[in-house]
Length: 130
Image 1 (cartoon, rainbow, N blue to C red):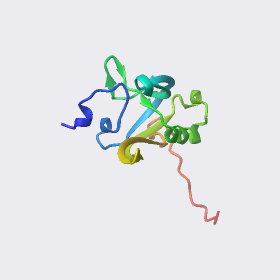
Image 2: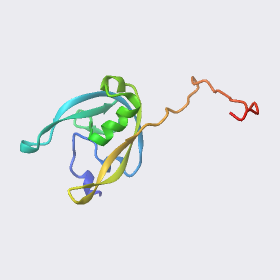
Image 3: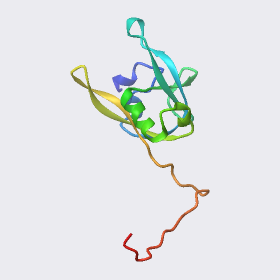
Image 4: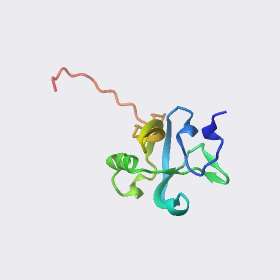
């Protein structure tokens, strides 16, 4: 048993991914109060249309940090309404926090997979050096 998965959470954490990246589609981004007591803070949380990670009656959210929000914003713009329907890949990583190396989640933008409806464009080499 992975002790990191022994304590259920309403939010995604690195242990949920079992050391594998996952491609997801953004459904919505909402501000939620995260943490308890003096540590409670309003943070942006991302929910996905195709997430397999469940908590109680719903899907787990992903609490954004500054680094991950800037990465998504660099590709899809600063207005989170423009992120809806966009693909991302979430992957487990490590970061420094409070003098320790800890597990974290990171994001990268990946092109959606081609399917039968996606036209197959074949580019021919015309010999041009450009």
